[in-house]
Picture 1: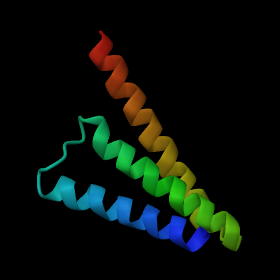
Picture 2: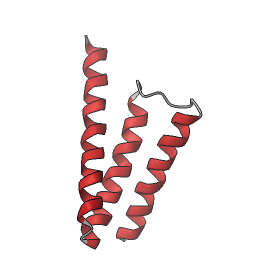
Picture 3: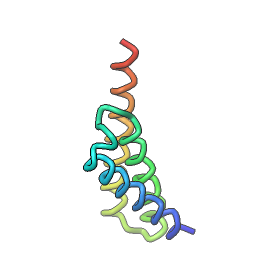
Picture 4: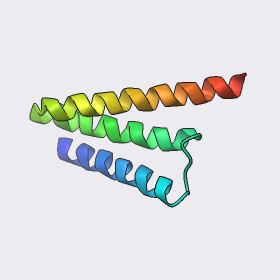
Length: 79
């Protein structure tokens, strides 16, 4: 099960980067960051299962960055 979740996370990361590179997504939009958050969560769960702590820390940081970006975008829109 954790392998499937890890693959979903990996695919979400790759799609976010692909769509950003092709100008299909913009960093100013929450969709890009939400894809990164899905990627982070999938790889966090997989890393926990494998006790892969370096991977866990990197993906936790990536997830925190994604959440922070979404909050920033929402706050900016509400002003």
